[in-house]
Length: 97
Image (spheres, rainbow, N blue to C red):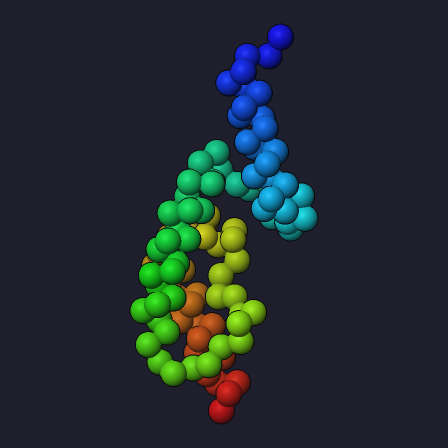
C-alpha cells in the first residue's frame, strides 16, 4: 500500500507536468537541479522586474517575442539575465532601423 502523502505528491507532479506540457519541452531534465521549480518561479519574478526596467525605451515588441528561455531562468543569475535582455533589445532595435 502506498501512503497517501506519496500518492498526493505523485498526482501533483503528474498534474503539473501535464498542465505545463513538460513532456513537450526541449529542456533536458537531467540539467535541471533538484530545486529547479522554486528557482524558476523566483527568477521568473526577477525576470518580470528586469523586463519592466529594461523596457523603458520605446521599442515595440511582437507579443510572441521572448527574451529568455526557461533554462536560462534556472541556470543564470540576475546579472547574466539582465545582459541577455539588454542584448536582445539592442538587436531588436537595430533590426527596426
